[in-house]
Amino acid sequence: MSKKNLHEKHKDIARIDQEAKCTHGWYVRVRHLGKPHVKFFSDRKNGGRSAALSGALAWRDAKEIELGKKRTDRNIVTTSNNNTGVVGVRFNEKMNRYEISWVTKEGKSGKTSVSTKKCGKEQAFDRACAIRMKKEEERLV
Image 1 (cartoon, rainbow, N blue to C red):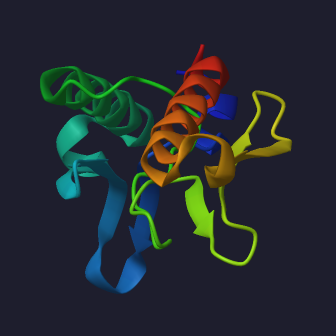
Image 2 (cartoon, rainbow, N blue to C red):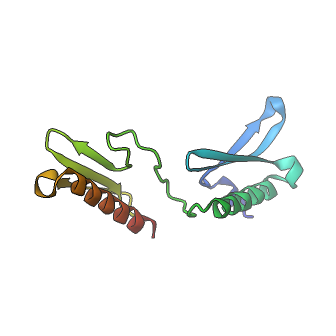
């Protein structure tokens, strides 16, 4: 592994260097369906810093396959703190509409809305969720 690769950021992998505890290695945390899966790759036990990073990357990728999690280096929000419980979809009571937001492949924000006046609240919600899902799939392709 190149020296440059050791200093790149790797999704779900953090470098741990604690001199006081003689702890040096890579900490991997893969979250899936709200549950964390973690493992530490010690430099000493894995044959050095570079080898430990290679092991951490391989474990992360294998764990994601095992869990059925799609491999991507993009950050994906999986929890919602809005009033619908669906990431990127919220209900605006004042405007009586569902508002949908997403991030494009280029990292720009996108948004649109679906009115409940035309098709009712339930159908508007379903339409909003479908739009959000389509936009998220477009981003990850």
